[in-house]
Image (cartoon, rainbow, N blue to C red; front, side):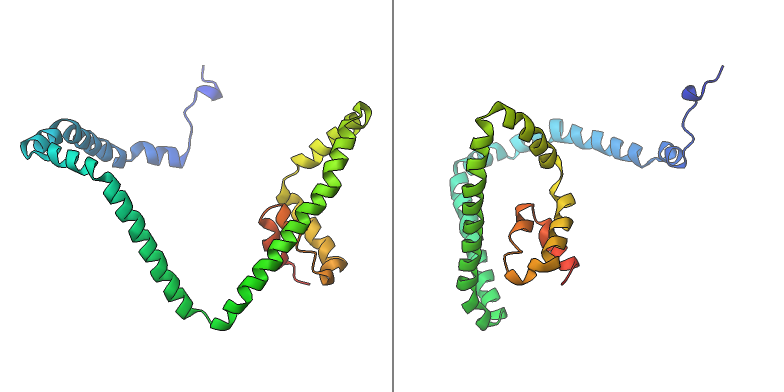
Length: 187
């Protein structure tokens, strides 16, 4: 008796893959390559005395590592110079000031979080009754992904707190999604 579970799948993709010969060609080529790599290539290495060359290269690996990092540094300096000549110079004067503002904003957010939530967590953890009430709520709220909460935070900010300039603090705390959401929902 034929049961539905014993019938082969009737899928167009399954039949195409089953009839495809590309994997057979690749598997034959891979077998030939692996035989060459494992058995034939070492004979060539020893015939041309390349094992001595590899030993010498192993001794010089620190030199090549240093050469690599020096090359990366030169490329980085070259790209920085090209970028400097490409960008308008009036933008450069704003970078230290904007960096300071960003640093102060992040520091302020961390201090406020430390002042409010650290004592609150200690206060909740000191009493078993409070802990049994607050901990499940915190676990449920903590299990919600940030990209689910971000649109709500953005809408709240856009409803009225946009003019205070502090509205950009909460979304990055939830991840980079906040930056994209603020661009999607302009004021």
